[in-house]
Length: 133
Image (cartoon, rainbow, N blue to C red; front, side, top):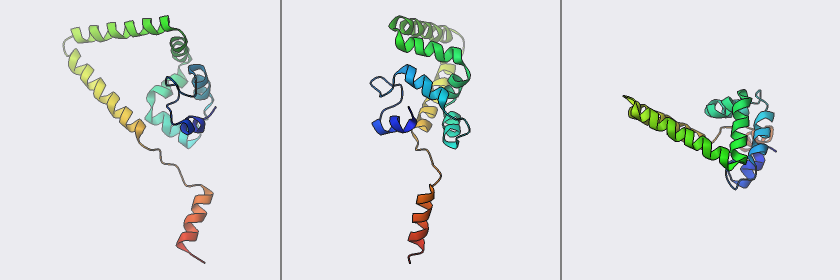
């Protein structure tokens, strides 16, 4: 499984109806080479993926939630309870707005195209266009 497979389908990896299940996505995430510049850039722009790679327990919980509707429902209930608790605290609403704004900024950054260094073939074609023989 690789990122190109996900790109080829035009779907978000791990999303409902995507080409990859949660388990496949977890295996892919763990198999990515952190020394690859594209992977480093992806992990830098998506701290939640970096956290999943570094926290196998959290990854296991996410896989359980993806596979079991009761676990997912329980996690959503816990999330809702945490939001209610935050809103009941002084300054909680503004903290929640800040977090929402940060999340939207991360989502926008995730949608931005990733810059890839040119391949040897692309460099050669560029050189030929600049110096027609």
